[in-house]
Length: 364
Image (cartoon, rainbow, N blue to C red; front, side, top):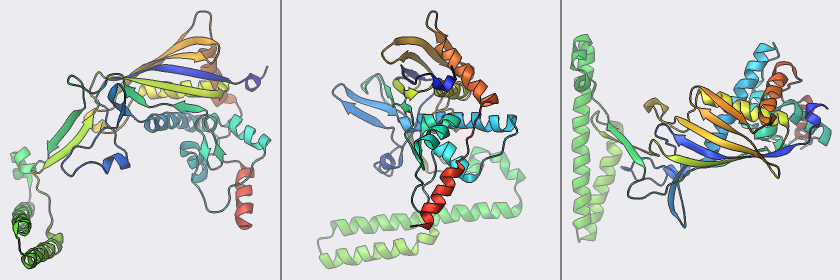
């Protein structure tokens, strides 16, 4: 039987991700909630058991899609196939970019062929054209709620003056550079005096009981702020607010579902996990050593029971352990790799799709 004729199954992965290093991330909406002097927050959810830190699903899913995209790129090179256009790349990596005009209509046969020849698209979906991805990747949520003995760690610091950090550097600077350094220090001092003056005026305005006097003082503050915009500088010794992170050793629950996925699509997902194991970084601040994870998931077929386990060993491999007498996972992984090497892989936006979009846009 042709591999693609095997009935699709829903694969259920339940497991945990362990923070081998601090885990940090912060989306735009969460970032807007932080105060000026507060560290960048870590996402949290609350339920009847308490408040829990978590790593959002979108980041993990995007990393896995990126790993799958790498595998496609490597297959194109290995097979000497045509490279990707910008539209192809957008479709593969992020599911397309919405263009002007109506989206092309695809009949069922075209749609199924597109998905069959591009398992990355079948797994992770697209918005242009609309493809409902089969990979449902859940948030990674800390098992332990925030409490007296468990909570976010804060990483902060201070901007460092180059000559205070390394005084010997002065011997390697040109005279002009030393003049620039002194000028920069003078600007910081001058701007510091302006800020102090503004604070004094604001304090006086707040304490004044005379409305006319308050207005006069506030006008002076506004004028000073406007006049000093060009002089605004940041001291090299100013503290950095830093960021919050899930601490090392935290265990986070994670659920993954591959809904009605073919064996090739299961293999694609396992291959993406395998590639992720070689660079297992989630979230921000990898320059600080943050983001490293390990993980372990049981794998079951919906309605049929457990078929194995996969263990993510950081910077080593994805360990695939079959249930006794089973071969579903290893066969899926092998079949996907064979498909990438010799199968009818077509990761490009289909001509029918592109022509259809052009025709519909012209008729708008």
